[in-house]
Image 1 (cartoon, rainbow, N blue to C red):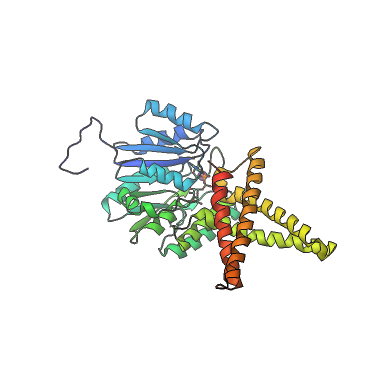
Image 2 (cartoon, rainbow, N blue to C red):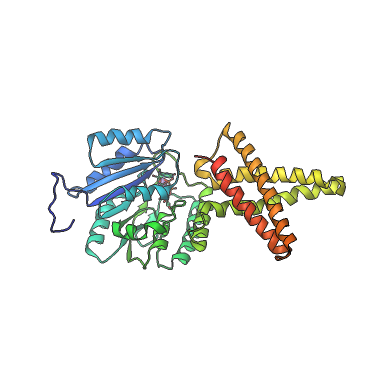
Length: 373
Ligand code: GDD
Ligand code: MN
């Protein structure tokens, strides 16, 4: 707050906001609040849980806590998933000058919070990071596969942000709100690597310090980081390379479309082999249907992971997808043919233009009709 303007309310506004993304952490949230309150005694803070409508009733638990403590707040997002986007929305929902992000499952050591706060306030720093990979820190009880995965992702991350960060994958940090506001439009919000996202988006290199902590074992609930988060990580990297003007879903959609070509050929080839070339038309139709179907399911699992169709929706989704992509194929062939007939562009460019128009059509129309919100 500026010195010229006195505090107008009986309670001082928060100096520090803790952002806690949650998905199925009903059993842990009360303990999180209790521990945070204990370590932040004497500081004006608030805690914002950003819950993606957890089926276990996390949001309701947080509401109960908030009825007894005005420092507890809730953002309940409907029909959305995503760790990074949850953190970003939480950070935008507060006016506190300092922001911390912490997991809601008690795996992050909250006793580091006052140390982070002191460090950030006294040193010329933009961000302090809770790190598992500096002296004094560690991961408690992770299996070797998880450790290996984490180390690989860490190495790639370090390469990309060109900062000597030991733990770029950490989800535990405290940052000046101004840093976030300065780069808010460049954050991708995809996946779960919010810290990397911030380092990427910052217009100038961030002044940071890492503080060691030991990653605790989970007491209740389960980790939500499945294999698909590796895919999200790749998408986020692709987004960084290509830029934000092209939607990341379109990149995913196109990658899967490319894979569809391989599926198509893998189906067509044995059919021609067994039934001879007279079966070309029938084989082509079968291959197209199989490729479209596999594309539909892959897109449903990967591209639209956060709004996946399930149960009966799958049937309508599949039907609309096949219809739309069928039209897309017609447009593709029609445009390529028209361009080729004009004679200005050769076969290659004509075909490429057809593919591009088809891809954009398929992407745009299925986004509206197949995976409608
Ligand atoms: N709102 C929301 N939406 N929250 C989510 C979602 C989501 O889709 N997915 C997970 N969370 C919440 C969890 O409820 C938890 O509070 C926190 O985000 C971390 O999720 P975990 O599922 O517990 O992740 P982890 O313990 O396996 O991974 C942690 O360590 C990684 C480093 O290896 C996290 O801190 C990661 O951010 C970190 O990269
Ligand atoms: Mn966890």
